[in-house]
Structure formats: structure tokens, C-alpha cells
Image (tube, rainbow, N blue to C red; front, top):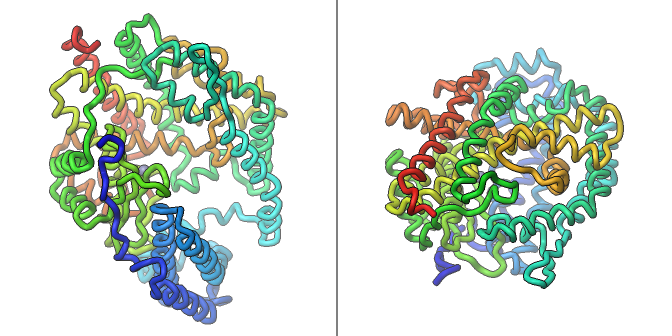
Length: 600
Ligand SMILES: [Zn+2]
């Protein structure tokens, strides 16, 4: 049966709680509250005079309360994700959210008092050997300290943001989520949503793709004035807040969130630009596969080669475990548990949320995976991706709760690496070169869109912030900056239609989380480079990689990567990732040449 080839694959959440009305949920909530109250009674107002041993005890107590809260919150959200139609799950989700917030409010003083501490005293505490296991946690709490305003000011900012920047964000979401596009197709007009029209760019019919793209930009231009106004307002708001919070440039706040320094990011971006030629080579190769003299923008995602035959879930499991085993038996063993112990919910059901995720509620437990498995290659890769997160969450269980999670820049390492392993394994087992062509082209397009395009997006934002200093941004000005930021990437290899000047206007990252996009570049390039190291070093790479996953979020990405010989400040390291991309293009080229007749 196509469409639901994972029937019966449901998760078993009983390791968390027995059911939505399990009395242990209420009991745990009460216990957390009681513990939080006595925590407050003991430590409130005393953090400035606390000794390292007491600070350690306090941190551990806080961690245990947070760990319990995370399990309850995860349970209610997992139940709800798996079936949002049940009112009792909705009730639980709301009740838990409210109660967890109440407890967290009781705990908040600890962090605030820790932040108020002068630098010297805080440093002395963090250097104390007693606190070794929490030095990273305590230090990273303090990273925003120099940019905090007074409590009264922060309160005003928070309240005014609701009717200020957050309101503009909501307006953007409202406009873009209700956008419809009238597509003329075979004499008839169809109303399509944004995601439906974007999906048409993957169709084999060139005229349809061209038509879809024109319709997309026409539709966006109708809202261009408003979308540009929203963006202009938010950029100015950021610039104002950056001034008030003494951030030296618009990217610094994001670097702090990512626990990365700007210099390393700058080098990574420069190396990326020096490698745009790899994209141009690929675009030319794709043009020849499509028998075109040159690609137009709407040809970028046109299918080539032959699609892989659909997979049932059991087959996907076999392929994924096989690929993981080839890397390390520990990987296979750890991943097998997810299937055997029912930590995955894969079947498609009414009321279940879309997409896929992996949740790691607590290091004392194990992660859970949700996906909506149909039967195509995308879905196999999605399971591989989420299982990669799952492996990370399982292998880092020796870390305590505060050292468990990783920042954004490295959060996708294990998942994308897992995809690489499965991808390679799949390609090697194909006998039809046309299928291999489709697989490699798909992988390359993903990687190019992640590495190069996200770099373009980041450069665009830099240009926007720099131009805004001189005055208001008109839709024309934003469009110009967009086109000029894209030009080096597409070069003469891809023709950009004039309507593309509206290409920036529906991208939510620019509105909701500025400079988010370079984390994608970082994550993908890091994995490509690590994968190249694995190929070059073979088995000796495996234990180092396992150690990286086991370390969880116990230190900054830079420090955790050092034992693997990775220096994120070294342009040569970033170049390694591009060598892997270049090798993929060459592999595709070889296949195309070898199978010249068969490929089309
Ligand atoms: Zn992911």
C-alpha cells in the first residue's frame, strides 16, 4: 500500500508516563514545585556570598528540577504531537505548560543573581575545581551579561515588543501564510498556496516551472510594499537595540547565541565564496543533463536521472542499520534500540502533526523520534536524519542535563552525518546509473542550497543592515541588494529572471531570527569536512567521532571539535568540506559520461 508503508509503527511513551491521566504527572509537578520553593528559601538573595561547594549543590538541585520538568513537558508535547485531535491531550499540554512556567519563575532568581555577580567573583567560582563539571554551563549563562539592560528597562522592552517588533513579525506570518497565487494552467486558473507553488519548481515540465516561478514573483510583488515596510522596520529596531545594548555589529548577538566567535564565521564565509566555482560547475553539468545551453533559475530543482523505487519502512530500517553498522557497530546497536523498543512513531495518522523531529527529554532516559513516513527517498533520509539526532541524544547520556544539549551550530552534526552515511551506502548499492545520477544530484542540490545559498542569504542581511544605517529601505533598494548578493553565486551559470528581486520577501528567517542562516552553512560544511576526514582516516576516525557525540553540550563547539584536529579558525579546515563537494560533482560527472546514453 503506497502512502502508509509504516502502518503500525507507533511509539511507546511508557518510559515517561503511563497515560495522560497517570497520577505520577501531578505528583511530579507538585514535587517540582515544593523543591523549587525550598530552593528559593535556601538560596534567594545569597548567590553573591555563596561558596563553591554551595554553588555546586545549588546548580545540581536546579538541574534535577529542570530535568523532571523537561520529562513532563516532553511527555505532554509528544502525546499532543502524535494526536492533536484529543481534547484531553490539549488540556494536559496547557496545564503542564502553565505549571512548568510557575515552577520556572520560582527558579529564575538563581540565574539573575548569578548574572549580577561581578566578573572577578564569578571567575573565581568557575575556576574552582569543585565546579569543574558546570564551568561551561555557568560561563555560558553569563555571555549576554554585558548586553543586558536594567531590570526595569528589560521589562519595558519585553512589554513594548509585543506591540512592536513581535507584532510586525505576526503581520509578516499572517501575510505569508495566507498568500495565494493564481496559476494559469491549461486554460484554467488555479489558486495555490506558497508551498504548493514552490513545489512546482521540482516538476519535470519546464514550461510549468517557468510559469510557477513567474506567478510566484508576481504574487509576491503585489505585497512588496508591505513586506518591505515590515522588514525595514525590524532592521531599524535591531539597529536601535544593538546601540542600546552595546553590540558592536548586527551579527554579534547571534554569534553569542551560537557560542561561536565572529572571526571564525567570517573566515568560513570567505572560503565559501572562494568556492562558488563548484556550484557553477554543477549548474553547467545539470544544464547538459537537461539538454539546455544554460540553466534558468526555475531549472535549478528540475529532476534528473531516475527516481529510486519506493521503500517500505522495514526496508528503510534495514538500509539505515546497514549503513550505520558499516561505520561502527556501536552505531548499529544504539540505533537498533529505537526500532526494537518502539521509540519511533512513523505511521501516518489523522491528527498527527506533520514533518519530523527527535526529542531528547532527559539524559536519564532516551530520545523519541516522530516522522510521517510515506515511502520515498526523502523519507528514508528523514529517518536517517532523525536517527542521527537520536544517536547523539543516546550517546551523550553520560552528560548531566545542563551539559546535554548542543548549540545550533553543532546541533545538526550527527543528523547530517547520519544522512551522509546512508546516502553513500544507498548509492553504492544501486546498479542503475540513472538512479545513481538522481541520488547524487539530489544530494548536491541539498548541499549547495545549504552551503552556498545560505551564505548568500547572510551576505544579503549584512548588506541590508549596512544600507539601513543611511536611511529607510525601499522595496527597490532591498531588491537591488538581493540581486547583487545572489550574483556571485549564480554567476553566468544560471540566468536570474528580473522578478527574482522579490526572492527575499517570503523568507521567515530575516524576520524572526536575523543571521540565523550562517548556522546552516556551518553545520553542513562541518559535516562535509568531518566526512572527508572519515574517508581519509578510515577506522581511526570513528572513536574520535563517537567521543564528540558523547560529549554532548559539555563545552563550546570549538573546544569539543579540537580533539578531532578541527580548527574552525583555519580556512584550510573549511576548504576540506568543499573538497568533498567537489568530489561529489566529479563523481556525478563520471557517471554521466560513463552512462551517456542511458542517463536521459
Ligand atoms: Zn535536524
